[in-house]
Length: 321
Image (tube, rainbow, N blue to C red; front, side, top):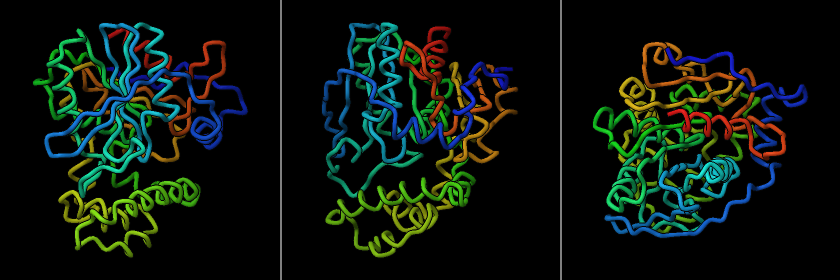
């Protein structure tokens, strides 16, 4: 019964507001120091993936996947890599297509249900044979991709992959889309849409004729954007079809390695459906931890280590498993 609702995360009073947690961690936090080295992998379909390595000579690796419109350079990604580097693990941040600072080559991008690039990248890592153990970790969309991939592989997962960690993960995409349209999330929604539209504009020369750019630029929420951009670019009928096929929640019961889901109870991005308590109660492998506070990818914590509580929790979990 890996369900933990009495978490040991207890921030000071002034940090017990979800918006302060979310905004401080995302916009104010100094960038954690990590010595990244960029490597580009050419994909079989003629595109590329940019990967950011932080090697400390470890035989264990944590592969970190970033969130929507993020990159391996985001503070939450760097924070996980830094804490695991200090524990003797190498770190690798995989930048989804178009998220590394350079537009990708094809008329496609990335989305919450896209696991093929991760699967292909892991095959390369397995073939290299440099690591005895690999853990997958992610935040936001990257956490969602992590869970979906682990569930898809199920009992057929490669033996090198030993654990997974998912932070602030929207396991039910449709209900989360509605949640982000609530008035108190409007500033976040605008920020996401502004970035998504700008990314689409950069790709205008690659867009198929059936993509209505005016409709993309006038989208007011995720449903409207996914209806006219994400769905047609990636072979879905519409936004609801994309959300239904891509949500990771149906795959959770098939996960067969120790996997931590860390979702704060006060996360304003997440719907009630994103706290899979019954799945965790029935599972030997899915660990659900629900701190009372933390916001969305917040978990702000001040001490001499400079690590946020969530990063320390990731390190503890991976050491245990």
